[in-house]
Image 1 (cartoon, helix red, strand yellow):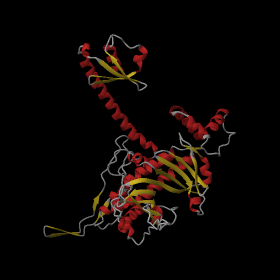
Image 2 (cartoon, rainbow, N blue to C red):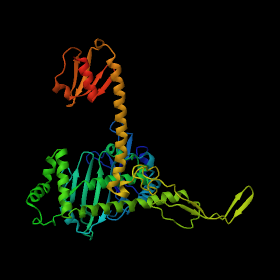
Image 3 (cartoon, helix red, strand yellow):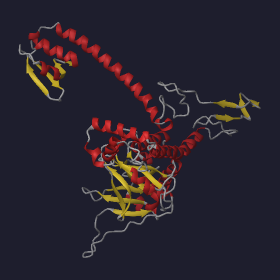
Image 4 (cartoon, rainbow, N blue to C red):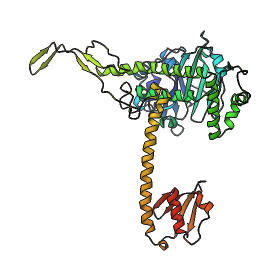
Length: 469
């Protein structure tokens, strides 16, 4: 789940770490003068680096931060080839608080890596050969100590990594891979998921959204199963596949051509049943993330009714109803005994678009979860968004029509200049005169502003025609 991370602890006094017996901060000393060099001091402990950096402006002030692998820390500094659940993550956060004074609510995250380790039905190196590109950017080799272990696609906001976990950790399984996103700009992540501090990683619903980002990134990869025999392909399909296998081909395409090429590529894969491995690995990622997150979700639900004595667990999706026997309860001095079993079941909720039962999703959900129901569930949210957008546009058109009627009642001589924008995003300013635009120029107009009025599309053209003729 969560692995590499970097977060600041600037609320801490460096003395808390310097006097901690578990941390050893070596000093940098000048060999000639013996003077202590005011530089960043680093202590390594179980896969984490604890850093104390003096302020350039004031050496008396220092900043604290932690970076490294939370998964390795959980394993005592060992490798991170196994599972690291949401519950394990919470335990690590609590341990950092108790041992090193880390306040999760005040610890702002600067970088984070999240992903899953999954076992494939084929060898990891064979699967890596299937990966061609992302839709608009090719992969580079991912190497450790000059040993190639996988592939990485580096973007300005994040990196997509797919690599052989067994080779990285030097362990036996040859079918273990890790699919991972490394977030380099938290502003991009926060536009998708409300995660800012270490405390946000305690919430199963936020971890669920991280899982969806990981699924989307992997689902968008372009994979080709080389088991397809070229003898099966038609002459045209062979020419297309030759291009589709070239990462540079995808980089050169614009959005429209890329969309058409992806559609053709996936049609060929589906025709020869070659897209199965992509779907199978996507399903493995989804199942693994749900498994890792569910333990934390179960613990959080358990905390709600921890003072009761459970009799039985009733499975309703991923939400556990409460089922308890009240043995005795004082009410107004009397004792009620042998009260029947009380059932408190979650209120049934349905998707606002398709009507599917979504009671087992997180509280507050109003549409189907893509993580639980697959990519088709995204249509529910998109449909609702489309309807809302249509209503906004209709209201905007009606408002513009009313404004246009008011403007046409005014004397044209009261206006001096008009500003309009064309479809190439250029803004023009023009004096009001009997000097109409040509039909070609008028056709390009998409927005008009004049004296506080704003008009778009057809209404913009009507305004210009009225003012300039």
